[in-house]
Length: 150
Image 1 (tube, rainbow, N blue to C red):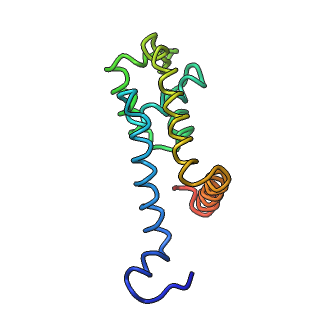
Image 2: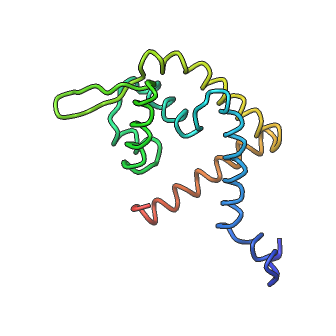
Image 3: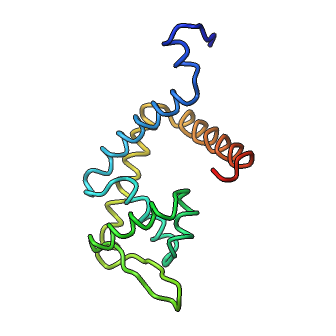
């Protein structure tokens, strides 16, 4: 696509603008898919990571989900209050794991994840979705190599 000097065309040729626009639309699709769980997609994905790991500390969870430790702590605190997680002390370390209520919520979360995946694949196509995801992941890796503090 040729980028002309009009504002609309400049926006269409700007990675920041188009990636933010895509991110907002994907977030809306995720919100719709996860609505039946009453959890935000971010909370649900955190619970999926905890389910996968069994028991994990907040630093490892932050690394796994590519979020700041303070964001993870805030999410974990909310999920503790809702009764979906429980904290385990391991000496000086504090880990979290799913509570019984959290375990019971997991089938609904995995169902929502699949509904979300099917919805964006229906819109974008299976191959395009897979390729776009891989291209974005590659871009993330390239930027992190160049800017490790990101």
